[in-house]
Length: 226
Ligand SMILES: [Mg+2]
Image (cartoon, rainbow, N blue to C red; front, side, top):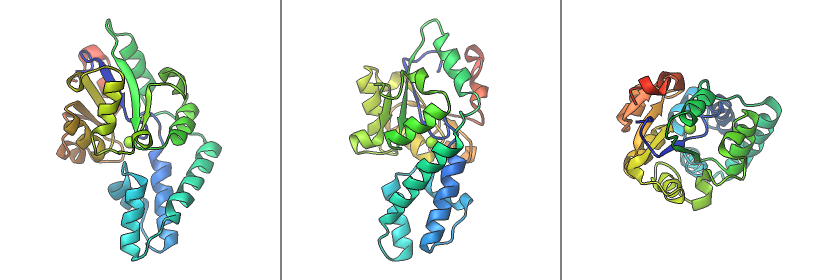
């Protein structure tokens, strides 16, 4: 499918940039400090790939009080850690982009993330991938915050496809979260699940057309099952 599509839509966190270990650890710490003791595994299982306002709502429900401060505390620390520590690319991301660009009829590529643009900018720049999408102000970078709708709603994927003039049926998505699988299925796109922190069977259960453990399994493109 990657050999014969017109647009490949990459999720950012966990597909292009290796931010998930940092963000899930930090989310567990912030929620624990508010009074609900959870660990990183819990954060991965329940919060990964979910919109931040939804997470705040769920934490508030558990604590029995609204906690709007969670979003601010979490974001502030996340940006500080990302800027200080450096974020690397996901293994195989650069090679996959190279392989796509080398196809006889290369598909367009773009990024669609539930995260805010600032997070995408810091992490993609740090991972050395920003220029591959035309720089940080590129029209190939789509944030859920731009349209006010987050995955699992298919709106973000559909918005990206429409903006780039590609039919959903000609799009392939790569995402590492259940919410990304649901969004792709609802958008009528081919969904490749990239199992990192999320178990492959969960991505399959949420509608993945295929699941890989590593982006390298998609290479070389001529031999890929996709
Ligand atoms: Mg992700």
